[in-house]
Image (cartoon, rainbow, N blue to C red; front, top):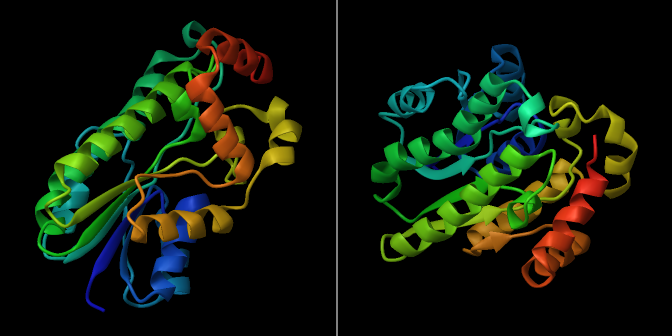
Length: 251
């Protein structure tokens, strides 16, 4: 197979699991993450056909550099997985950190999709954007993070309709708590015990995400409880949901 999959946030968690699973399916890979050392380890583990590019996608202009790196590479899958959260009341979290999060969680997704679409349109292709169950409701103390994931979900669904005649299928993966180190990166160590009770494993989430992507599903929500919470968010009073989530994630 001469087709390549571009995976962002490939060095850890769901992105790493997706990369390994796609390699087993015969795809060549372009692995994107910040850590050169971790990418080299993963590249060696996968195959000699895997390329890697170490870059911080939270930096303006980084997505264009990734697209330029892929200039002569036939890309048929784009996995926009890179992202992180920040825990705390909006006015108590450093604004520059929040802006960096916006750049990574939103801008990088939009830019990479835009720059790589001309390649993707050349053959039947797939875009899988990784959001979160946080996309389905406002989450106090994760206000900006949840809003970025709501954007990713809305963007994915709209782009899916726009591209329906192009041969490019767009799906959105919305996992719940997953054992990826997200809580530690977000500064949520105090909630580690709570997270462990509901965590899914990255490989499990990745398998369901890839399966749903190839089945051309619009939304993929791994886990029964996560599906239930997403459905509930559509029908339960929003103010009530916000009070419940505020209690769960109270700092």
